[in-house]
Length: 216
Length: 301
Image 1 (cartoon, rainbow over the protein chains, first blue to last red):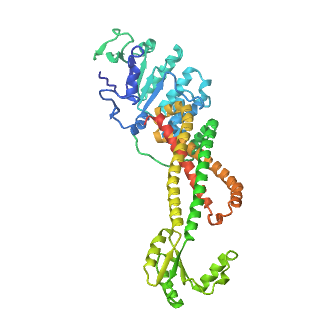
Image 2 (image 1 turned 60 degrees about the vertical axis):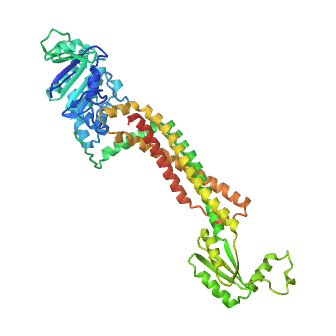
């Protein structure tokens, strides 16, 4: 299969669980390597990249998960700052970047709270802030709204849209029909590890939109 | 993508690092105490072994250095010629000291030594030859020096305590080899145990490690706090071992000295400061290596 994602675009990867959506994301941040073929991210060949280079790739690729993956014993602020700290950033950078990201996701007022004191949507916002704190060019979201109620889901999607408008490429793997249908963005449908459709303003179900590319 | 490493001193960054180290240390207190105890036990064993080894090797070299070559000159040699020969021997670079013993002096020494056992006053003439006592700088050279003296003119018998030299040399060599094996075995054992202990603390924080990897922390960055923990545990363990050793030495050694009074312990002063530093270094190294090994398992490298 052949998948190209434009810089600054917003793409949905859809398909049932276990069909390969997450695997495609994992290829992009080098959590996995392909058995065959090539993966390029931001002009750099990722699949053959040296292990020692992987951390630098990950600073350019933010990742958000369904289960948030926050550190329970750290506050919102610390969780976000942590991602910056581990890259060896200076305190000056931390003081500048963390408030910026918390403001972007609308959590400035809860920066001293711990994850268990927050609602699901707020936890996901924290995770998004953490993913963005290193100013990545790409934000990968693996079922970002899988644990959230519909109202919170649309809030998170709006947030992702705003981030996209600032120039960050966003790839969302989801099987949430409502999200996909409301947004009307590029939809790549994956079944059994193959791309079965690729639509430029697509819906969740095939045939409702205009099919632009078909490849296998 | 930035791959260069910029190093700048930053109090906030240091504070963050130290904060992480101490928080983790406090959180896994039980584990750390186990690690410290393990290091303390092995370092105590290592320390007592090194102490014993140094005592024995000092004793044996003390014995070796007191070994003398006795040179008995031919009967016809008079005092003047004897002193000349002794000067020639003394000029040998391997020789530390020579003492010329005229036959009269030799007899007096013999009488002293045999006092109360044999009545030497019955002797009508002095049966002893003039003699020279030779002390050699390096105990290993005793046989060679004895050989070359034997070849000199006017020299009769040359004697030294061959069996003692050989035995002591063998003892020293065995101690040295055994020492190397013991040191390696103990250090490896300590590293394995401490690495297993630290592995449990790493396991408790595998989630944190996974997240660190996800957001782009380098492996060395992830390892650093664990290695700092290993360093602290190893050093503390060595300190405990040193404390125990100091108590044992203060309590035990005087008693041993009284019991085994025939052993000249006073010649075998162990360099305690050096031993202490060696144990501290060993403990720290063991801790750091142990931590490194156990974190590496979780970094998939």
